[in-house]
Amino acid sequence: MTWGTQAPQATKTTEAPQGVVYNEEYYRNIFKNNKSQSVDLRMGLVGWENTAKTGLALSMMDAEIRAGKKVAVFDVDNSAKSTVDYIYPDAENIMVIPLHDETDDSIFDAENNVDYKALVDKTNWFVNILAEEVAANPDDWAGVVFDGGSTFLKWCEHAMRASLLSRGIIETEDGTFNQKEWRERNRMNRNVLTRIHALPVPKVFFTFHLKPVQQYMDDGTGKKVLMTVGDRPDWDKGTMRKFSQQIFLNRYMKKADVAAGVKGDKTLADGEWAIKGTIEEMKGKNMEYVGTTHTILTVKSGKVEWTELPFLNE
Image 1 (cartoon, rainbow, N blue to C red):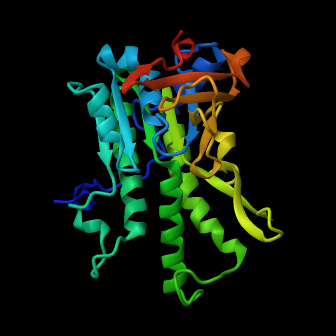
Image 2: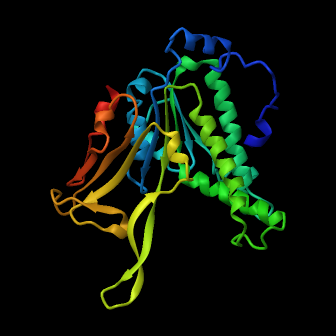
């Protein structure tokens, strides 16, 4: 049985379900200056592949995880489970939610191609289930990790293009179309991100990839060639406004390699490398760290030294 056949039928009601924060008691608590419903973190973690984004998110819930609090991880990039198993091999309170699951026939069409609209629907279905679980026992939860915001945005784009193709707006999946059609992709993407952001749990983390910024430059012979000159977050315009905290992660080696997304650090020896995080946004406490860069981990002589960001756990 697949995820689609297990979903309960959603019913609309004018009354807030028991346990959710958006009810009369919640708003009365606001007027009473009751801060029990306040949230700690809504953080975006941005970096190239293999820059410890998922591990850093988990480290900021480590005390809660070891105390038995629950964490849900949406494994959009299909890589979170290995990180969870490595750091917490025996933890039963971390639920990794597989989305692009090769054993799930419901996310493939009749020709065995990925049905991206089904993938987006599946993600929404799991958000519904998680919201019900959190509402039933909110004190049991430490937080949520949505691991793969850039990949999910691409799913939404593929789903949008399939819709445009079926409606005859484009003739091929890579066809051109009016800019206003991007609203469909953005709606699907923002719906999921907004709902997860609003879950009544203390900490929510979203991970995103970087993508290269390229421009034509002189290659030294007078010929103009397309070169990578930097990078930027691979997210929908406006996404960054959702996060009160943002950390950008980069890999460092002794010699920089811009094309590979590696920055230079002359203090590192040959063969050594490190991952560092730059605090781009930090509303609330720890604002004094904005603009600072900190080592997350280093690899020397084949040994990993994990230093994380302890000040964020204080």
